[in-house]
Image (cartoon, helix red, strand yellow):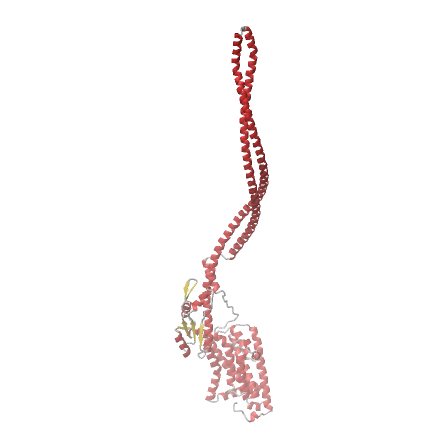
Length: 631
């Protein structure tokens, strides 16, 4: 009996009756129905979230934020109700609770009464977070709770963007105002620097002048002391001069009185001379003296008269001079007295001047020291003002000079600073296409497992008639492998045409499915050959293990270490990986490793099956004599 004959005999057995044919067709449809229905149901669940009923409760009473009345609860509600993320129903709190309990709503999102007030508290001394209350009921749907958490996170980011947008705009406007004020302050600081420069020049001049004043007042003090001493000596001398002048005036008055008497006597003598001459002439005439003698005698008197007249003139002149001397002496006496009085006043004033000059000298010295300190202080103040102006100018330069439109754009960017640009080396068409490699690989195993419920792994007749374990094992593998290929053709048709999944490499994808089902057939065959019904049960166990270790839904790296180790050994993970590469257009070089592992499983399981068949030709087991009720 040849291999084709063994296959044909098995197919005739499987189609010998109507029920057998129906059972075969039903089992052939198992992977198609399983994979097709599951992937159809999960083809695009995220695109149908708009049919998920969700309750929205808005109790927000609003608040004032930065001078504006805002109600973030109403704003969020408007956005949610106007979107298509979920089937939103804005209801009261009691209605939401009742709907959540009886399953009318999958979850409830509640914005409490202090929602806006909590957001507005960011500008107060006691900021607090605003609460978004999510109420779920896992008795309705556990994944709905997970989706609700994601929805609340999205609402949270939306509200945060609103707050940051407005807060950022307020901050940027404040910075713009600060920049204007800093510019004015920098200008004022520059004026202060210039003014302090002028003040420093003045303070330097003041310090120099104060130094000169201190020197001059010291000299004045010394001169005033000298003047005071000289004035005191002058006062003493003037007093003596006044006393002497008074004595001189008294003496000259006495001399003037004598001179007046002498002058009067001289004048009288001069005035009596003509009378005396006439009397002598009369007497001589009366005596009978001759006129010639009288003339001669009188002639002798004429010189005396002349001398007397000259003397009188001199006396009168001397008397006038003495009068003048007396008057001058009197004036000298009076002047000396005035000098004495002035010298006394000078002495008293010079003493006062000396005291004042000493005080002025002390004040000028303090003024000089203060002016020096003022000059040093103004110099330090000028340096500080220069640093202030420089710092203000640097501060102005560090604050950008922007207009209203730019600040609005900056605030918008601040509220949403990160833009995610997706760049995928490969990309699944949708959620269902993303799951297709895993569920197709799983459906292939289920299909083979189901076929072995009616397919006999090894023909006892062939084992008895032939002494070729390899041909018997090959025929036993080829029948379910061909039927599995039919299953995979049907599943591929459902994926490609009924569900409309796209394939970067359609023929390669089909080839991976065919190789996977052939490998599974060899494994299940070996288990059945060696262990019979127990092996069939182990095929189910092996399917469960691969269901959790293939990495079809979550990354296999999230598995516990023992299960992650099985991922690297069991074949289904390699079928999934190979399908992803050829279906999405990934790295085809990775497929060769997957094919190598699957080939190793195929060959290894085939060899194990052939060895088991060979063992059956030489031995009979208790199972051969008493078959199991399962198989």
